[in-house]
Length: 319
Image (cartoon, rainbow, N blue to C red; front, side, top):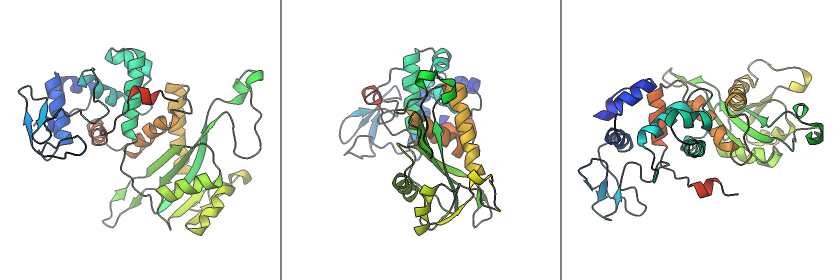
């Protein structure tokens, strides 16, 4: 089967997928890995379909509608060759990502098209099944936006004491530390992060309760908004304002490392992100952190697992 062929480099990608048929066969082999083609349309669910002679199109035996391996995914209705989508996935999964301008040059499309492609891929990167974090979980927040001292004097914002920056967007993160499972295998660290409107106590509490299992051991930096979490979690903290950053096992150094990678990617590649689209970039870096130990092919196959989501251009640019 084509789906069993291996590729590591972008040269391999072009060699393994020389035409549209090979690309679709690969997507089909990953989407329906048990060999049973299921109708992707809502309300049908049939597992019987006719295969057209081109090997790309299918027709459901029940609802009689035609579909392909891209139907119901972020690639549906796209006129781009599938190889360009696969190359976009390969390039965006680089450690620091790829800009829409550079991607447009690399795959031969306009910057606008490349930006739409990247946003749809990022949409899929955040389309993971919900998994509660448990064990030892570090929590922290960061703020994305230009530094005030680099702005014109008339545009500088006067910051108030505390953690409210009106010209920056807060991003809250929860990172489960690496640990050994019952079989003695090392389970790598995993992060969940999301852009937020504010870092008020109620907002943070809702996020933690949604993504972290009750009773887990939380580690923070002494932020007062975390105190209410003591009712349902074990909470340890190191007050950074006093100059202390580590107290035994209590620290937030692991998630600070994730913030470093995230910020470097934003500054070096994307330069500027708006509040509206910031969360998609957050999900991009969270995905790359969580699957950092996989090779390029395994990462792309994980994206294919999560690709059953649509994002239309009118919805992307809607206010």
